[in-house]
Amino acid sequence: MRTLSHAFQELRAHPWRAVLSGLSLLIGVLAVVAIVTISAITAEVYIAGSEQAHGRQISIAGDIELASPDAAGVSRVLEAAAALRVDGGAVVLHFQSSESAGYGAIADTIYPTPLTQTWSGVHFVAGDVAQQRRLPILSGRWFVQHAGGPVEVVTNRAGVDQFGAVGDGISLAHSRTQSRAVEALIVGVIADGSSEPTLYVPAISYGDRQPSLFERDVRLTLQHASVDQATLTQAGNDIVARSGAQFPEGSALYRTDDIERILAELRTQQNAFLITAVIMLVVSAIGMLNIGLASVAERSRELVVRRALGATRGGILGQVLLASVWIGLLAVAVATVTAVLAVTWWVPQQIPPESAIEPPGVPWLAVLWGGMAGVGTTLVGGGLPAIVAARLDMAAALRD
Amino acid sequence: MSEPILSAVDLTASVRLPDGSTLPILRGVSLDIHPGESVAIMGRSGSGKTTLLSLLGLLSRPDSGQVMLLGRDASRVGDRERAGLRNAHLGFVFQSYSLVRHLNARANVELPLRYGSGVPRAVRRQRVQDALEAVGLGERGSAKPRHLSGGEQQRIAIARALVREPSVILADEPTGALDTSTAESVLTVLLHSARDRGTAIVIVTHDPAVAARLDRTVHIDGGELVAAPRRRASRSRA
Image 1 (tube, chains in turn brown, blue):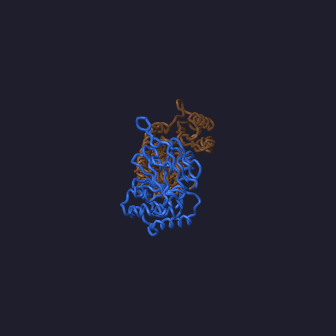
Image 2 (cartoon, rainbow over the protein chains, first blue to last red):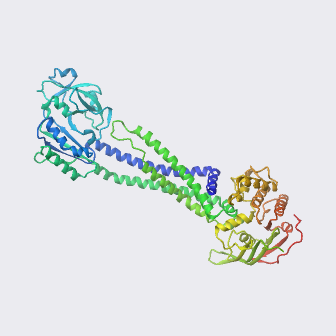
Image 3 (cartoon, one colour):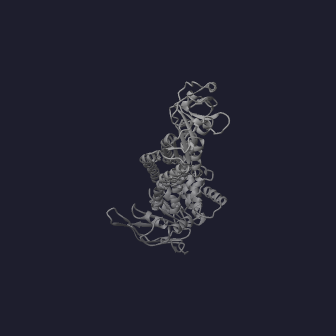
């Protein structure tokens, strides 16, 4: 307690020295937190873009032929995948209509022929699209598949000008032979990473109204985060077999996400970040060491006089070291507050809303490492001066 | 005669030179300090008088011989115990005052009490005030050293040496940095305060006028005492 009090007095007596040491350490700790955070955000940018476009890890896909070209055939695939979905996996069926009609205003629903707009960019999907890919909602919500009322659809940001915004009605026809277009309601705008206008239409809801939508050929995509590719492929083959579907000749499930490749490419960059952080800490430690040794040299007479008056070697060591530790703890506290504020307030403001990048959480692990590195730096930067102080020759107190 | 409170028994000390050889500083020095007496140690520069004082003050260790404090060999005990002995029984006055710059006069005087154990804060405050008043600076407790004159700083240093009521005060040229008139008054304060408390004083000095005011003088030359300790009759010269 006495040593603590002397250490605190020392800080008050030399505020600028304390501030400079603290700044040196603060920069080091903040550098660690910032570098780890930037590294995480950089990885997140690449991963988000990839998951938005190609699906989350691990995604596999392949073309299949449904047992029957109708809603029942689709449902059988989804039911066959129930275990996978309950286990946290995702299943998506994507229809590519071979016919081509168009879309128009709601008024065209009654007199649909001809719907003059082109059909491209309309995707019929079933299953867990929003789970398999990272598709943040910019406004509104995801569609809900139900039997009554207009078909709920979502569009991407580029599609707002072409298809309409949330709350707008739209008529859809996938075939020029169908007697009536289908009334749909845009319920959400999503960020799918595409600059092409795209409309996502729930296949089963639409198919209930226009059964001629369904064709035998669909694209099946499976995703699961915690199984390996071989296991997921086996599960996919089982799902296809159980649902009565089959692979066309020459077709098979193959990997579609590229997260592993991205992470491998980022590893070198992250190692460089890590080395930079370590260098920053070493620079901080050298700064503290420099200030500490200069301080001990300047105060050598005071320190030996204190020993002459009754301070023990350990007491002097503790006094000098604790003064550094006070500074270190203060710097770590300020660095933590700064990091938390930056990550929770500043960083989210820098992320474009249409990107799939999720605002990073407070990197507590980085803060913890930064804090531990800060305390370690303090012990190194303050330890040597403390040892030097404790080993000063007391007889020097009698000589000038 | 009373038992000595502090004794040097056949002390030898040396320093190691850069070429690896050793240079003897003290050669078998023996000296007794009795309770309440004042002793001057005189000698030429480099004669070993400051080394002797640092050995007596438990600031360094002899190559051989003993330093007996209150009847026990204090030269061989560990760092913590030596620190305790210095704190409890020895007071120091240095030539260049050696006050802690960022502490005010009161806090400087309080330092030995803070390093000692078990003195309540209220008692510490009272003893600090008493010590400051004993050196005539009872009103200057809040002043930082830079706001005090050289004579005042040395009186603060004397108050710091007295506050723990040590058995012996060891002073190295306590008036060496002061002008004649200030030196006279500072020495008077030191001797009066010590004698009022029955504290022995050992002063290293070059100044015969200082030595003349003490009970006896020992001369040291080439690391050896060259004159036998000679006790002065008068203790009222202060």
